[in-house]
Image (cartoon, rainbow, N blue to C red):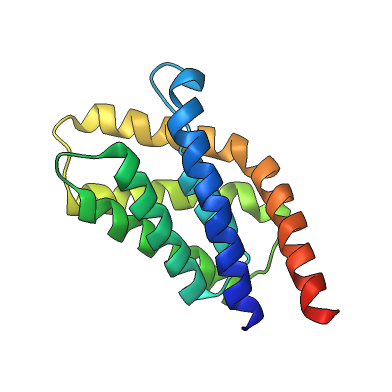
Length: 167
């Protein structure tokens, strides 16, 4: 098994933990109607440790999990597609422009959240545009706050996975 495959498997296991946190605690920690998207945050930060294909797979899994707990009346496919493309974009950037940099994690997650939500809007337009904009901006700020602890935890986990590869 390649190191990239091991990363994606471990990050997918982390996504299972994130879905539990999202479905259990996200409603109780919302601020003015804005909830964190723990699953998307983990997928975008995790994609920073992958290549484009690994990021896309991670985004696909994140979209599938989020759509399963959100159970939207319309837009199930839009959620999956937008998160797959967001994960691919971050993974591609990680592969070609930067690699695992904490200083870039916050703007990457903020931009990735806005990009992912914008793609979702293009695929499944929302009726109340001002509310959608408020939600998207609030969600990107909330995800940015979660970025540092998620990044540090994943960096530690991915480092341990890499240690097993060399021993």
